[in-house]
Image 1 (cartoon, rainbow, N blue to C red):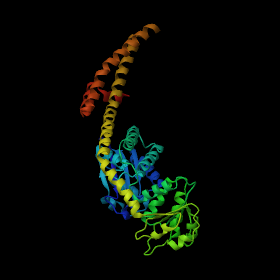
Image 2 (image 1 turned 135 degrees about the vertical axis):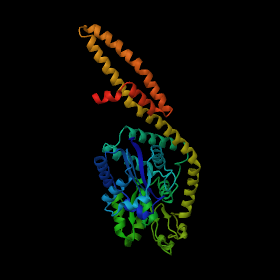
Image 3 (image 1 turned 90 degrees about the vertical axis):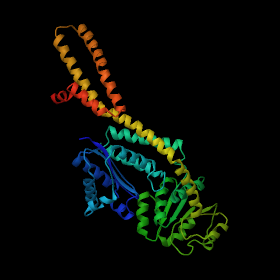
Image 4 (image 1 turned 180 degrees about the vertical axis):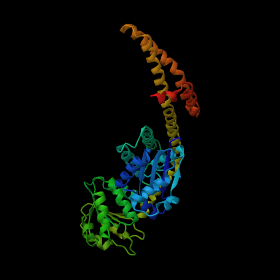
Length: 422
């Protein structure tokens, strides 16, 4: 039975956040799953990718293991009746479709924010986890390096990764731009709702910044701060923290402005203080800008910037798809050649065995010089004999007729018997 590269995919496209949270996998769980897959199912070329928007398992096996995989995920996550979640998963059992899906995911074509820059790093980490556990064979190594090369080409040759297309990342990009000349800018993020949490995650791309989190639920701020190496301040102390900060990002739900002109006028602003209002309705009074040194950007400014970027990225999709098609074609040419490699090696071994047996049979009494001459002649003959079937096999690959040619050569040279005898 033919081994196929397959995929099991759950994403924001076919599952609500409540389901995605249930099957989301952390690094330790991924490692445990990889080890179980290796031990129980003898899978090869396996990759597990889990982000806030998707959980996917890629693997090579003769059989469709989707039900077994979901049961295994359920076991690790402590879920009862995990098989009932199968309806939310997309099962991909065709080689080419699974490969194409992984390419699209890694490029950001399948991301909630088109061209998401984080996904390529997440794919690299997933690949590293597989490689560390020796679950990446020649097939997956070649596939992943083709994907990384394609990603580089997309960045260099298209506008698909230009700028920030999500509000949260655009906000972080704006902060980076405006604090470029500030040594270790102090950033205070107030509110860890959906947007605030996303901004916090993107703050890791500001390695020189000193980030402090403030949230009404203190435990959530502590948890996120521990995960990303940030500081935390109680919500009751947020006004004092504002005075210390160079950048204040507000993402809280409040019917009236939380940060007022009166409040800010009491701050001692030495050079500048940047306010970024990501709340709807707005949580920072627009009149704050009247205070010398106070700079205010609201969600509309940032959305506008993100929307422009998104339009450029969408326009670049046909170029990206064309680059992906070329890469997949190149990868498949390699894959087809890999398919015939075992047959070529068997043929070489079979002919080499015959050559050695005949040398031993007829050159028992030959001296060293005579043996060397005959050895050289027979090796040269071998190379010429094997050249034609090898060329034919490779040509058959390009015509998608490799299987038929493999069968013919295997029967013609009795390679199965040769293999068994060893």
